[in-house]
Image (tube, rainbow, N blue to C red; front, side, top):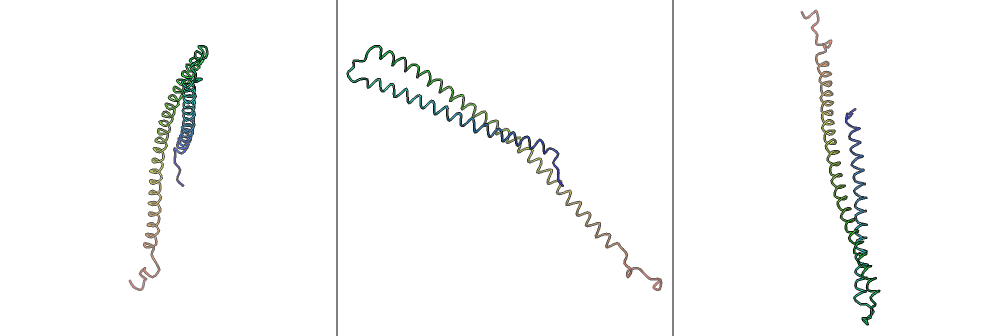
Length: 156
């Protein structure tokens, strides 16, 4: 029965790879939400800005209303910038998680290949041992004197 001495390490590497894949999926979801929030805020800002351009149509907007609109646009610009920063940060996290997954895959694959080589070596050794045993049995049967092959005392 083949037993890989580093099996526990291989299992730990497999778990690390699964965890890295899960973290990557989570980071991608977070990045997608950040991009969606940024797009939503940009749409709100654009809608508010175009509503200002349309105005009441008579050009009689009050100074107070224009100041309030300007204030709201400034706050939305800040929120859009924050959302853009969040989206950029989330993309960096996705990149880091992708690198971690790649590294975990490479580490696990290295141990997998080592396990395969050890397994092949073990199978070859088992096959050689079986062949030796069969050769010994064949030689024993061939070398074993039979009663008809031994010279009798009459023939001497």
